[in-house]
Image (cartoon, rainbow, N blue to C red):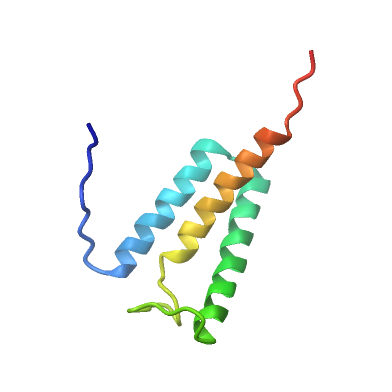
Length: 98
């Protein structure tokens, strides 16, 4: 059985702040390293710039952008993805010595 609930946010700022808190919580729970935080922030910044570039040049578009040309929650998603992929990479790079 799957439990799910649709959260109704009053505006996009509330959604973005909630996702930012959840993203930092994800980092704190699973990583807590400076390199993980730096990787997440770098990925969020670079990926958001690339997305803005694509939207500005008409390659991609949002139906209702709210932060320059993109959605304001996008950097939070990129941050979480950077932390997750960084942790997966660290786990794959570990060598077990007996």
